[in-house]
Length: 466
Image 1 (cartoon, rainbow, N blue to C red):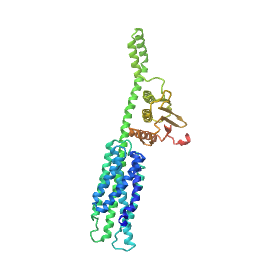
Image 2 (cartoon, one colour; image 1 turned 30 degrees about the vertical axis):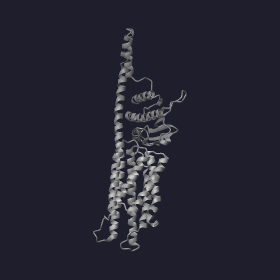
Image 3 (spheres, one colour; image 1 turned 120 degrees about the vertical axis):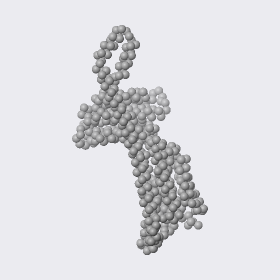
Image 4 (cartoon, helix red, strand yellow; image 1 turned 90 degrees about the vertical axis):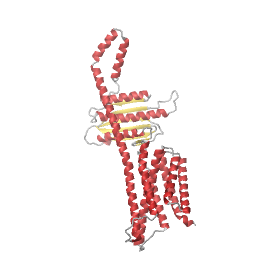
């Protein structure tokens, strides 16, 4: 009686390993407590055992067995993990595709090897694999599928971070189609539908051709799924980069125009003084106040954030105003060297993206904090330092951040996470264009980004310069 369940007994520990890896995958990208992760593994394993035992007792049609298994697995993920349902559908479709394709590739390849061994070494004309051999092959396949899920979980941070909901659904649909195709192919194999040699080469070659067909189909499907997922992610990031870059061009043009107006205002200062003197002598105080307000709105405050670059001055002025509105402490010491080879637009891209991320981190920290008592320290600060260091231009920005917030290059878990990742990509693009380096650190509630760019085109060792 026990031998009837030999396949289940052999595969159960390996499938439990796969479910443990799947639970880790879902916890990482969907978020869950340790309790829910453990509950998912236990429930999924029990449902797998139940479906397999029922299948052995009542000989459930294979297609119905597959559909029931999918429904139970998808239902557990939707029920036990707290992320948006669209993201959960994408996660579960990736897990199912990885398991199905890897196990099919391994099954088909190992079956071909076993048949080749029996035919060539054992000299069996038309070998047929026994149940225990199928069991061993199934064990190896499930173990490799678990390894595939483990490796896959390390490379999908940007896919699951900061995308709109419909994007996850659009990505999941082709993966679900691949699963449906393999369900139908497995159903056909269970009903004796095979790739045949034309009837002249025997059962051995018919089996070899069929397993080879499944193996090639699974490999092509895996490549298609991988190219689709990572290709769509790359296209999305490029589109966001272009969109943000275009908005930065508009901001840069606005800053340039603002400085032109400021220069014209300074040039006409003599005329303004004459006009103000006339209003003063006639005691037209209200008109004089309106005149002064118009001058103030058209001209930057003199003597603040004078960096040596007018566009950067205008940008820092705007960001400082934003910091003051949000009660964020602002510390700025920026000096753009005359020998700086970075053009004005790229300088604005660097400072703009860095300060946008810094101010947003401070705003999230302030909004998440419990109201402070009277003598508590300020919860948000931004510190900007930029200067020439030997033959390089150094930019270093420090800002406070939520100590519970996780950070990885190109990703973020904030509400508008896609903008954070795109901003860092834009920074990296500019720095690479000028043969510079970027370093980021996040520790003890402080985020630090450091940029080092050569001041000349001549090649030199940046690390040695520091």
